[in-house]
Image (cartoon, rainbow, N blue to C red; front, top):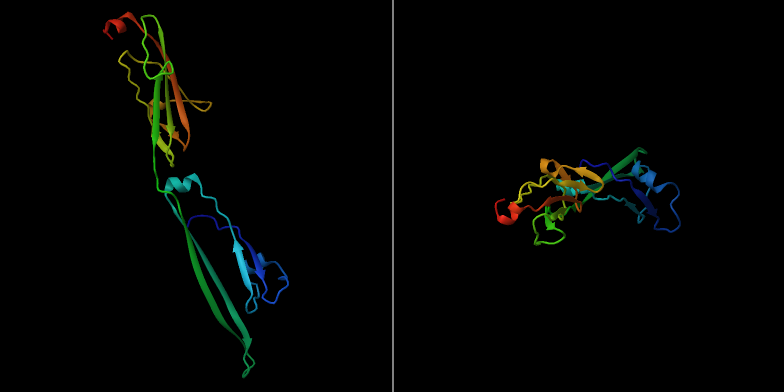
Length: 193
């Protein structure tokens, strides 16, 4: 529902053998196919589920409605007659349940904890990754360090982003990296900062 119709490819297999003359796809879709008793037909179409489908948690029903008619000439009146026939079938694709997840890792000099002396630099790195199965919106980083503010530069791929703004969209599997550095002061060592 709300999706474009599938592009179908159809085939007709005559019970009597041989091949169907004409274009099975066009004839079936335009209501011009003539099927003898025992003839079979098959139509195949493909739809690729998108990330938008998963994000929107849609259900994708597909309805197949087939109509036709038995055409005959009345033996008593000679009039052309018809008996309509129809049938339908439905198949449904459901998407996985939304499982948003985010993984964040912060390191200093590539480790979880290091010892530094006054005058030494500390290089900080923060990585955030969308490890769920749906797109994450309004992703925001709040970074706090007891030693004061760190000027961070954040990127996602080649693009510089402002994760502190809370305005970042993180697609499934995407990650951002923020890096910055600070200099350890004597006040840090003395415990005054």
